[in-house]
Image (cartoon, rainbow, N blue to C red; front, top):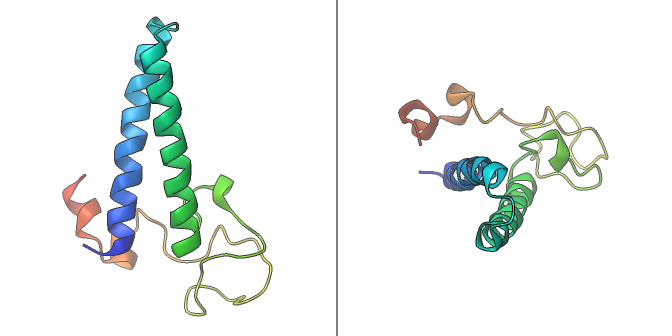
Length: 107
């Protein structure tokens, strides 16, 4: 599995965990352990998204860094230039572009 797919799998796993934990917190808003765990996993997700954006391309529009994007000359028409990098590189769910068995077989 490529580094891209490993990182994407980690992002998917922590995102799924956070979704479930949010549902729990909707009915247990004062559970301090759950609140602490949410904060920890939320910070982990932000780190993973930042890493993915730096190494590849922005995974969400909130990950765009106009000054330094991870796109190689092959992935963008604007290498080395400040630009809107949302459309640089293959989109993560495009399995043909990513040559990904991860998305074809599930998480």
